Image 1 (tube, rainbow, N blue to C red):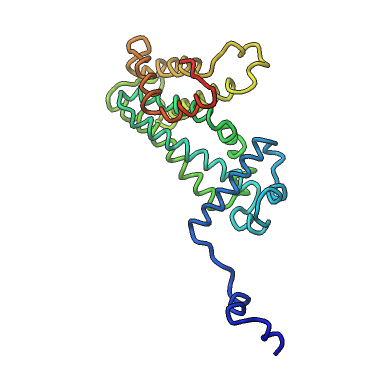
Image 2 (tube, rainbow, N blue to C red):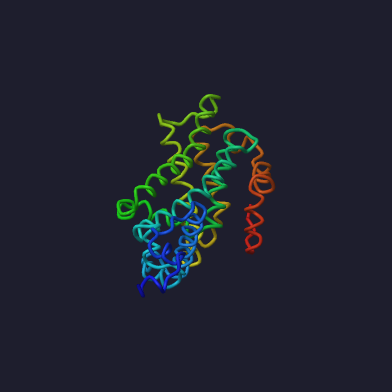
Length: 266
């Protein structure tokens, strides 16, 4: 009798009720908080230093709560990679909607990727880690599925640009290439240029005089001219295209860079 006497009716209900199920909004907010913390930790320390136990020390959540959202460190890393891909997919969609020729839209895709790399350098480089089997194999099925869906959203605008250019007879690669191969050539060029020139160039003499935005445009022109992607570099006013990308399509990102003291060299 004493046991029951110390609890009122509402307390008894709370004592024996099942754990509270979080609504979708709360779940999303909590997951974003976890990802924000992991992102900040990686920026401050490194990917290799990240552990669940270290995150627990910086969060108002228990270890069990973290595992309710992510099944492992690898799941968190893939979640961060997916966050970056979502940002990039939105930029690519804007590039595809650029009011211009297919080749101008192709240039806009590369321009968008450069802005993403400048504004989100940690997420940009995280793709190298997140693409390894060590990460994907240990991540949850839901994060893996999300990752595949986002890959489709990223490649979709690029493939559609090349498809339209083929339909208009504005592109003629020197050898038979699939749409996926054309898209991969663009991704490898853009990723390589940004990765090599965005960080630590002062420690490498061969890169010290290179500016990422200028070299990216040069490389894109070389690639597209190699595809015989019309109009060719010397047959069109590309400065006007770049000006409209900066002032209209990606004005928010340009303003963000300016607020950080970064002025594009093009």
